[in-house]
Image 1 (cartoon, rainbow, N blue to C red):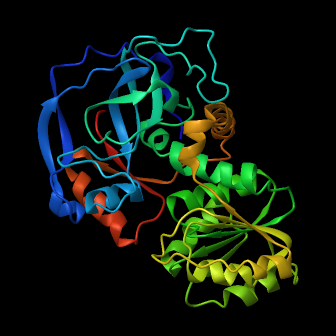
Image 2 (cartoon, rainbow, N blue to C red; image 1 turned 90 degrees about the vertical axis):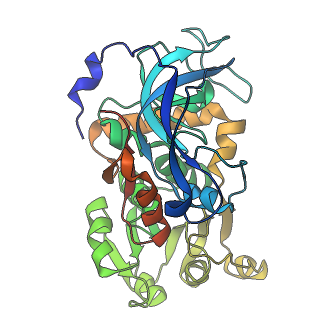
Length: 357
């Protein structure tokens, strides 16, 4: 998605004293507990930047935050939202110098200037301005507009680390992606194709199948209609899936263990299906496959150098057109309904809230 304005964007304005922010006032369903408030604009502390928010991608943790079910439980009222694109308007003390670069944990974050167009991840960004740790901020890809850029970080970083850092996906291998029409699923399909893998996507309905195909899936299976195990074995000539990318868990994981290839790798990304599977250690032993966990946020905390390197590769792939987030853009006023839609499980790609034009 080209964004011609990004190269000549004017300097960001000085932040006002107050801003509009959606806040969770009590725990419950997102549409019932999110309220629009006028609150003070935060100021960045050491190692932080203040960003004027242009767009916020909705993530399932936003649903869990509203319900009080996320591993981090802020005290209400609090601002949800964990992923944004925007412009730097203020830089806190001890900001990195122009030559600083991220390395292992504790190293300096990338340097920024006021007016830079950026993406970042931090709880509390569903608002007109947000403070984000500099280490969690990266320059937005010039090839993507504000809404697509907002949807890049979490989904594509998760897919990148799952496929390349954990599973070490190789060209020519068979990749099975569950929830292939969802935000992280589309990212995994696109990145798998970009790596030269042959991709099988699993979706929840016929209506979602086209999204997985458009992302590059060679074979698309509909959960509950197709015999997943038989279909994977048939598509691969009995070989099975070399890598399984599983953000669903439960029955999806169990089916994957029955069609995994010799020396295959199952990457456990999440449990969107609502059931956390029990992993029987004897089964990977007998069939000679690996089960790998992926918690991307730990890389941002412990290996920001790897996150920065992955972001650079994602920028390159976006510039070539190999990856492009699939987004459904909604206005700021509709944010509660957008989070509620994601909770219903019927969405495809990413829902993105446009905050500022």
